[in-house]
Length: 333
Image (cartoon, rainbow, N blue to C red; front, side, top):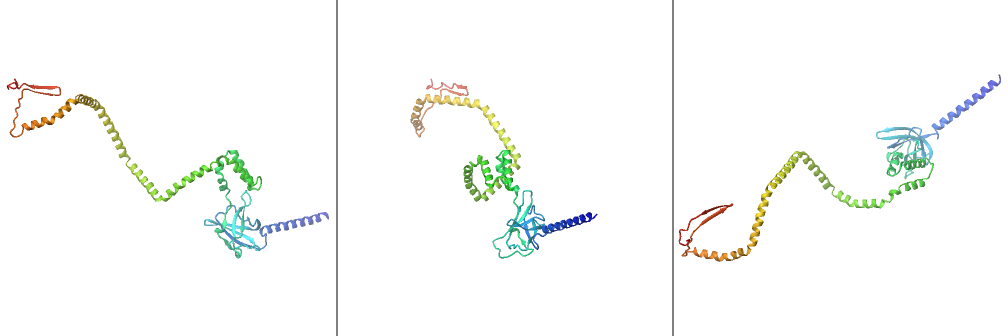
């Protein structure tokens, strides 16, 4: 029976020690540095920061985050730091990754002037804070590389990037070497790309210099297109009328072609006849002035000319009319 009370005493002592140790651990976690000073920091993005997250200076834990609250479009992080740590008035606060599982901590770094200390309940403005690195944006930066790689190569590169950020696997140099190796297929195009950009520069300069004219041109084209769209029925009718007119002209030309061909043939024959009788025609034209002079002289005052009409014949269009007037005169007999 004496063994049972002794065992109970030992159990009680053990339970008491365990309770004291638990209270010590909890107290240490809640107040790890004795008296703490409260500060505030304003971030544009405090994703991943939550109450209990570490506050570190040069990688050493000096405090913890007490509260995260939304203030308009910014996040106000309230944190406590051991009072033996001097926080400069121009200190910079940055949210950093504690691990790739999403844990974050607030890193404090001194600014350029450490002579003034940030007062208790002081606030680090948003101009002196920076959000955590966006891994999504980081991997999106590798998107052009991923588009040129095979799925297996993309998976291998992704694994190596994750391994580097986890502190495992190859070093940064090995990672960069892998990226260089994977991009050799299109690295040789740098010269061509540079030449294209150099050729585009004068075009861009000219376009920028005539920005207002370019805007007016675009506006004018817009108005022209709008006007054409508004009058599309009229334009369509005009095009239809033009097509009909062209058809009518073609039909008229087809009908007149035989007559025109006949006239051209007759004109060709006349030209041939004139060409064949050019010498008599030239002689007649050469003698014409003398003949006209004599005729004119007979018509002058004091002159006389007798004309005897013996016979008269008229032909037109293949039809002939003849009038036997004489011979009534002795000249015609």
